Image 1 (cartoon, rainbow, N blue to C red):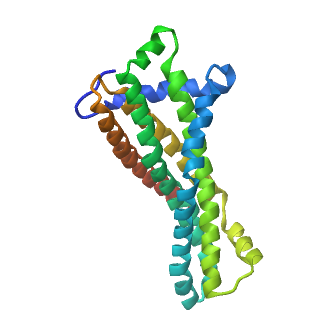
Image 2 (image 1 turned 90 degrees about the vertical axis):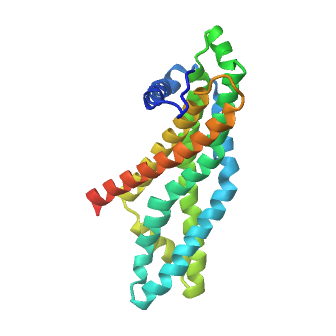
Image 3 (image 1 turned 135 degrees about the vertical axis):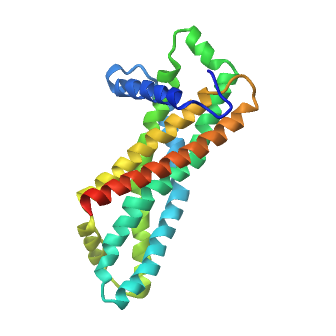
Length: 255
């Protein structure tokens, strides 16, 4: 696997993405890929990140309510709190913050693991016995990352909105049925679609960059941490750029 000092070339990364995407589309049809790596990656990416995601979501939801509700009450616009929560927690910060959590945890792990397999000649061993490393290693992690981001995004939204409800009670006693009923009315199909598109895109981006950087090392063990750091930094930058792009499209079309 050729590597350049500045990292993996863009064309090489796009080629890896095309291979992974093509093999992923055949995953359920051919069933040639072991389900164990898929399940374990979902466990590591989603289940083990539930704690920190819940804490962050509760904090964000509480912050939005504690800042927004008193101001909106001053101008007699308390009902605007609900679309504000949907926009901040579900549509904007939720997908991005969950992606950052996954980048910090899973992108590092995948890049390090893949690079270590290259250094230890395990990739060559797969090829020597006719096993496609893309199908066996990359595709399960690619699919698992997408599933995990979707689950984490939903999980973040639930905890963020619950955290907001708790804070609202400190300012104004409000029945749970009224709060969550008004909140559900503030949701729209474009909000849900936008959040889902972001989660899907971030899952593809993070997994592809981590795998590509891991496969891009040569033979020195010192390249492993460099590949991990590069995977984190590049995934971070690309996810931020995609988040801005998708949000801009949302406001252009639906605002």
